[in-house]
Image 1 (tube, rainbow, N blue to C red):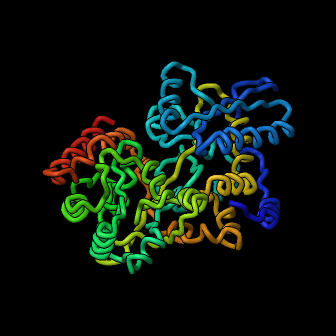
Image 2 (image 1 turned 120 degrees about the vertical axis):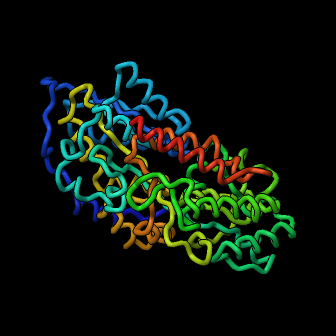
Image 3 (image 1 turned 45 degrees about the horizontal axis):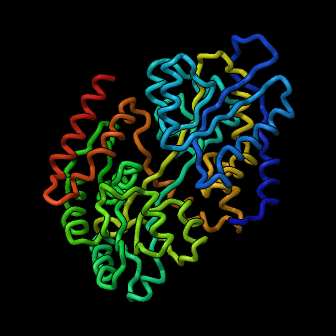
Length: 418
């Protein structure tokens, strides 16, 4: 996706945040320090691997900081969380990790506090919706996105359909698409790759969610059971989700099918825009339908940066992260991977730039977005359990009450153990 950069870079320079570290020193008195960062790969090929983004950023940083070297190792999302866990267990924690969750490391006292690392202007610049969701002082949002309902404009036009605004209309549209021979009227990816995301989007659209108003797990709430009963009976049970069982369909495969023109509707994030456009698929995007109309909340996702205390490089890490989070770099990353900025100033710049209007609908959803309960030390385990179990709730003869009740009990036990 090509975009004009001049205006944004000017904003980035105007907003340049190079204030010195406000809190923390280093136990390493040497002027020569090597920082190690483990990061996730957001690219879909070697051509746009995140390694290229980090290599360019590090080269620029090191040019102005001759006493500091930064080594970045990039791993796929399939491997990166496990890799960091193994490194920490072996006593070889990296200085920084950019992965999906941090609360378990924070609970063990292994991480620096954010305000011991970042300068005050940088720390204060994070999008409030993201930092409010973290509920702790140890994780820094690094990338974010929200979800919209994508629909194939060509298939909808040929079928005489309009984008759905409620569950009943979504099911009616899917029924017509099936009759027209569309392979996946609604793609429901509840496979092990990212089932927790599809699940959360549907729970929110049904008026529920993973937690209640005070942050306790509410996985088996009446609203959530009603949602998965509807999915089982009205979509999956009526053959409106395609030839691949939801338990076997991963998000990446669903996206690829949409880009091939085989999907009528699915919940998607900004990356899908580029994938579909490259294949010439004409698509539209609307807020995810709710049970009786537009859903009150959409799902937001944030990935996290954290810094480990093991090597005692807090001062150097803080200075490097101040650089990582300047607007120029935040916007460069967001543009490269069609993600939303995690800082307020970069978000304002994107919202005001005509070349970024394709991302405007996702930005508009961010203020009402709800994120995973990443501040809970149990979330990593419960998320893994959801990936393994949730599809059973919509399988033939499946029991939403039983599956959601089992997950709820696991959540309670995990919280008690933590």
